[in-house]
Length: 189
Image (cartoon, rainbow, N blue to C red):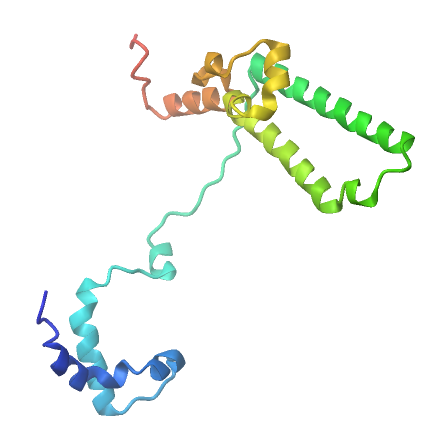
């Protein structure tokens, strides 16, 4: 709304006391203003307030219901469990080989030794892969790193894209059905 706060010259002459950067940086709730400054600030606030949509956390919290956390345990599907166990087996086998190689080869250069950071990254990647498998095996099988498992189990990621290959999604579907949300794809009976 052009002109709502006057033209630029009017605005600067009237409200410039509050646009001073050093004043804004040091502004606090306990700051004492002169009556003239207080009146001008209140006028500016009154004009601008309808256009400010920001709400602070405390005013929103009082309107929200209390947070409810409910653990809902679910089982992995057969394919999920198969992929999970195969991943565990391959990781155990790989880390065992690495340890034997380190023991047999004492002349490994210090630069080639795994650092704590690299080891932490490996652990994080392993845990992340297990999390992906638990959420939905497709999330893991679509990764290039899962190629050996895909080949060994003869599974294509596109073959398991549906929700029924994830124990979590099956449990979510059941929970939503219990809450009265019907599945549009299933015939009602």
